Image (tube, rainbow, N blue to C red; front, side):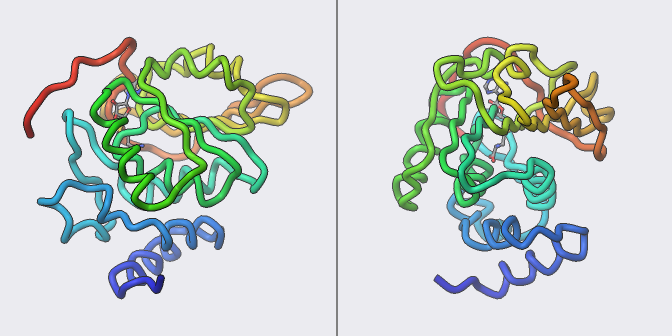
Length: 216
Ligand code: SAH
């Protein structure tokens, strides 16, 4: 499949913003973001902006998806856990770069919609689960990489515990929407290293299962 002009434009913009990892850029180029946004926003799918999805959630800005994916340093043979499936877009991007993606959301309908998209796009290396991602996915742990796409006041200990040796975790952390930063943890022989990367704005990480709202 050849990428349309609006995709090429987006990739150039991401390069200009400092996304240099060519594997990440080609993953973004391959995943049709228009298939992950609501019908009403389809024309704006390749703009470098966050967009609303169902259940009051958002699909992140492509720059943030690219930045977090690059920061995660994903390798071909890795097993990756994502918390916050949302539309499924970030999981689809990760699936281009690793062996298998495990993704969890607390909304049943979001998970079902994302699964339908993965099937339509022939993405067979993504496993989904409806549940509280703050507890991780103990049956599948350890993970080489973990990405959290909703902001908590701290990184849930269960996720840190499920990070394998040399594992890397990237998560937005903050107390309010205007005061979040992206944090990267790395498990080393000497313990957990912590780095703060950039300022971000994510929907909150909320414990427990969600009650799906019906309608738009
Ligand atoms: N990665 C998504 C965007 C995520 S928006 C994409 O590419 O479209 C954040 C998502 O995190 C929402 O769908 C929200 O329901 C989910 N979320 C928030 N708290 C959660 C929790 N405790 N467990 C699982 N999912 C959670």
